Image 1 (cartoon, rainbow, N blue to C red):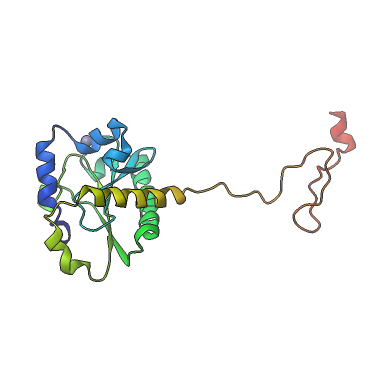
Image 2: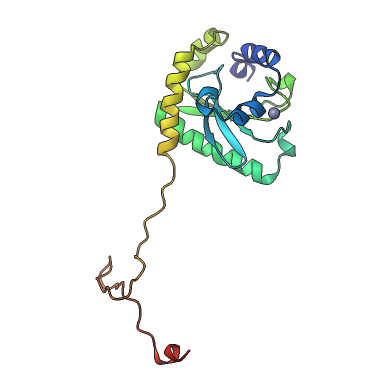
Length: 200
Ligand SMILES: [Zn+2]
């Protein structure tokens, strides 16, 4: 486990200590999602790219509220975060076709949390051979143009996974148009009013 989360930590901690506040509060408040690598905004939480990734496609999911511990999150926020995990998995799968995922939380500094006061989930795509070379790359900052290319690719995958409204099986009936329904024996025609309903 230590090996899994260690590579990006140094650079990440460095970035945090140089900044003035909490990146998980500042980035969504800036409303410059392209610049801050925010991929998707949910109702209570959002998805952004880890700019010091363990792997290509390493995403972070954080609530908008500045809360440090998972156990303090309201249920609605937790649920939204898990929904975003699902959405992230689908998008990463579409963009990078990984063989597996690590999904987890580092809570507290000893557990490897780079930012310990604002809880966040990691979604890390995995490939069979990645553990062999990633520790070498871990302390190398990913080039901005690579991040930009990954962002474009992931953003397209997120957008394409938006659920479209399901087509209705039977169109709403319109008076005066008595076409055959989509299924044999099913008519779109509205039933004629009966005597009793006419009186009302
Ligand atoms: Zn925060």
